[in-house]
Image 1 (cartoon, rainbow, N blue to C red):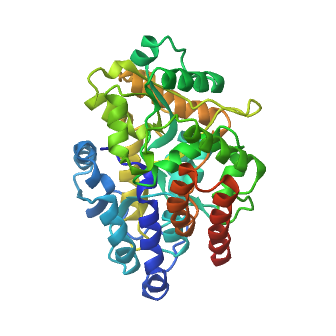
Image 2: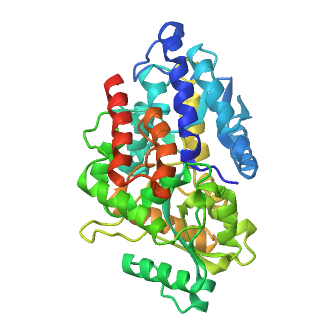
Image 3: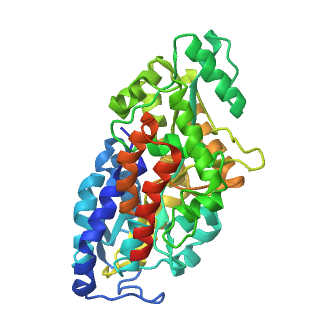
Length: 446
């Protein structure tokens, strides 16, 4: 199944934190300057090592291999060795290998402040600003995308896929019950009420794994709270808190969906995969989830054309379209690499060449660039993914992975408390108090 970004954010943050003390005394390279290429330049003979998170996704491994082989054909003096690890394994081993100076030349990693941001601020990742200028990355990607991998005003990663949470729905179920498309918030509520009355689960939702609550509550938050507030809330350098009035209203809104019986019965005891399967097998009318699950629907649903993906409708009509989300990891270069120039050239080729853009899109990976997707024949549901992402980018913006962006402390607080909150044993104010206590501690440690 496709990787969902927030699932591993906590593990990644904990892994990074575990080596901070070690990196402070164990890294021998020090911080590079923007003019430090690391030695070898494009055209030199070299072996470049890459660590990819696609160990979790067998379908994307041959895509990266094919593009890398095309790079090797163009540069026969370069050999690229790719190691595929699961996100869990990468997060357990990469921080230590980078801190010891034995890490890969290139790696892809969670771009959150609590993950890549920690590696960057501890001198383990090379800044990429001069490469962004050389290859025109700043012109190819929206600033809101590039900002996902910027820390202390320097670029430390090239976001490799765009992701956003929206609303999937079954056109077959909606047609059967005479329900209008849920493209406005009143239409969404009307659809949920109509489905419930018909004995159909309105929204498939399983929160046994804890992280799905981030997407459900995050959808409400991003429909009702300005992105600027959300980004401040999810930043250790921000000032917003979980007691902000619009945040409180958003939390209460999400809880109301549970109270009204819109969600899968006993959702805190239902695994994500089981809830997801119930949706694409026709047992629920809607599914609040991210673009990353689309390839699973296309592969596993009996009639994939029966499903649509739309922006989660805005609740606050004064706000332009927004979405929860971010980027699906970012390509970065190790500070200790002796082939930074070659590494940057490889990243540019496997990510931004016209062939690469089309190849990734066909595989279900949404572009982070302004690539013209009309040039590629893809499934309608996949194109709808692109449309939802760009509607948010062109509107109010894409915010953050709710509760999973700023700090491991906040994520730890979120997991158990969100289950209790959605289960009804604590209200929005109590939930916010738990989160703010963790956020205050995290900001104090910054």
